[in-house]
Structures are given as structure tokens and as C-alpha cells.
Image (cartoon, rainbow, N blue to C red; front, side):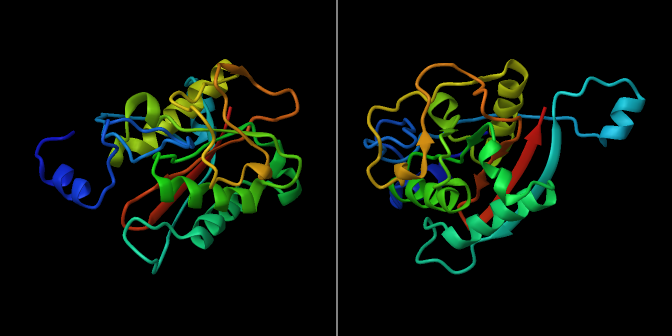
Length: 223
């Protein structure tokens, strides 16, 4: 919750915010992010215990991993190598072979809509998933609800679970034209309409979430 102006003032001074208060993830006119608020909660339980107790299972988290960027040129400059390592570790823990990465249904990226962040995040994703006739849909919830900062990881996770349940990839709004600095030749697709789950894909969904100070996190979930 935004309870005081201090963080807004600080991030305004370093140019993190969009002047119009709107995140435009992956778009050529991305100019920073819009702040959002959220109170999120998910109930996590070991799968065997949930099945034993007759609980409804919304999704299965196959892996959740974190790491840190280490030294980068600046506070707002993510570490591409660390993000790539994070994704590979998540898939390794989930027991997914590299040759099957392309079967991922879609990738919910952090996607803040900042010029530097979108470029570096998609570059890391391209190293892991791209250049394999991928056609992977990438999305970000931030254009819809703003960047909910400390709650943003769960915001994205909840979106991913709902997408799995409905077998529909939500559209990425406020996308006008592709950011030319993003490696589109890797096979990324930004859906502009609700998109049925691609028949060529399976049910893994990856979710990225990054912290301003260099903390990285990624869960991989399955229906």
C-alpha cells in the first residue's frame, strides 16, 4: 500500500516512473512504470497433502528459485547473466529438459515498461527460450493494474494461474508498436487479444519477478 510519498519522490528523481502513470510493457513508447497497490494472498500446500485432504488444486508450483544480480552498472540495471541463470535453475528443478523449454505455454514477464528493464529481461529470456522456432507469448500484468512492487510477484502468479485454468492467454494492453531494442527475432509474440492456449504448447508457465536492488525470483507453475 502507498502510505507515504517518500518512495514516489525517490523513484521520480531517478526517472523510474512514466510521466503519464502508465506501464507500457514491451512497447516502443514505454517510458517508465505506473505505481499500483495490491493486497494478495495465495494458499500453498504440499500437493500430496492437498490431494489427501480433498482441497481444490488451482495449480502446481514445480519450482520457485531466487538469486541476485550482483554488481551491475546501476541500481536500475538488471543483470542479464543472473536472470538467465535463474530461469535455467527453475527449469532444472522442475525436471524440464532444455529441449522441452519451447513447450512452455507462455511467459509472464516482470515487464515494467521501462526502456532498460524490458530490453534486458527479454534478452535473458531469449538466451534461454529463443531461437528455437519458439513463438512464445510474453505478457505483463503491469499495464493492467500498475506495478504493485512488493506484491507484484503474487499479482503475476495469480494471473498465470487464472490463465492456466481458463486455457487462455490474456492480452497485453497498451502495446502500440514493438520496442526495437527487444530481440523479437527470438520468436516472442505479444498477444493483443485473449488467445486460446496454443495447441503446440504444454502447460508450464514461467513467471518472472525482480526487485529494484537486484533480487530475482521465478516460479514455474503447472495446472
